[in-house]
Length: 162
Image (cartoon, rainbow, N blue to C red; front, side, top):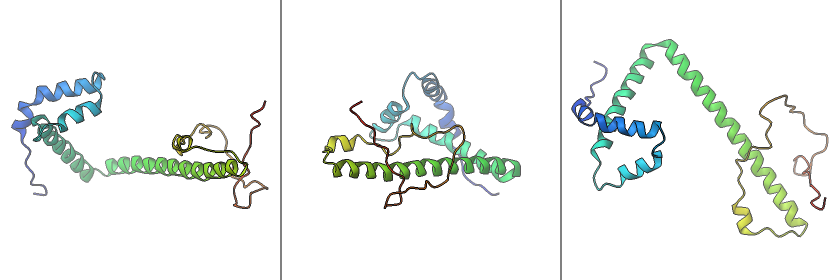
């Protein structure tokens, strides 16, 4: 026998109606997930519904592991999904790094021209903005012929007096 983990099926059966109500609340967006988690965590001891959900989760996880272990096609499917997720993480990280580097360059440029930037303004900046990223269409990865001394592309400074 490979696995020897028992699940408390009685606990799941006794709390099945509550679990279904919880699922319906989430599915139909009657209650936000954060509120449900906050309520379940607010009890001094672990709530019985939390215990039932954990037991159910163990069963689902076991089925997943057995299915993954037993099926090479399923392994390939999961690996493909993981590769896609890793690619997405790489892209998000690349955007964050690009934005951080160029936001810092823009801040230094503004400060060098005598413009004051308050802490409140700096706190509102986010390095995960992506409106300037073209996710569709053609992309060119050629280096521009002109780079700054730091090796960055020149900043485009808009004239605000127009």
